[in-house]
Amino acid sequence: MTTLKVQYRLIIACVALAIALAGAVWLRPPLKNRVFERYIWHPVPESVADIRLYTRKELGRSTRILRFHISESDIRVVVESRAYRKFDWAKLQSGSLFWGDFGSDYPGDKHVPPENPYSAVNMSQMPVNQNGEELPSWFDLADWPGAKVYVLEDRRQRSTQPDICVLLFNRALNEAYFLRYVGSW
Picture 1 (tube, rainbow, N blue to C red):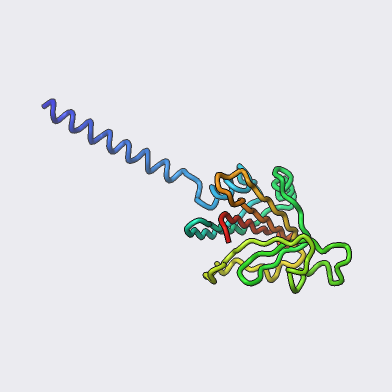
Picture 2: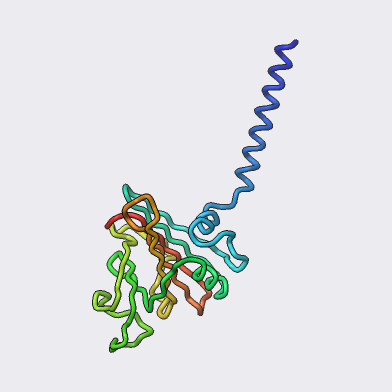
């Protein structure tokens, strides 16, 4: 009889543990919210909605892209909370995201990124889809002229490569992209 009691207690303990684990997994926020909180802002602001997440990891490098709705006041809080630098333009071209400043002697329309990003002042870039891999259909910067561009380069990581974060905000749509790249190219 004692062995039977021990078996019942063991079964009850296992069932209780399984219920506790299932509850913990069920109550845990979705991955896209956890990624938002880890890299952008914790906790996720009330104005944030419709978070979309793309992750690509390869040996020695990783790319994350988030697209989400957010209010202008909340984007301001995010930008001011960390050492983001503001730039004039961003452009996706040939598998890389370019950003830079127009400069005082820029001859073109300062609301449209330059045709040739290499001709810009203070230009930088990060790979987005170097190997030509398919990006999600919701990732499209073509309709984002005049977006506010903020860049954070974090060199505190253990790697020798910087952790580059680009935050793009479209005031007209109250939408933002957050791109994070770690690795070499």
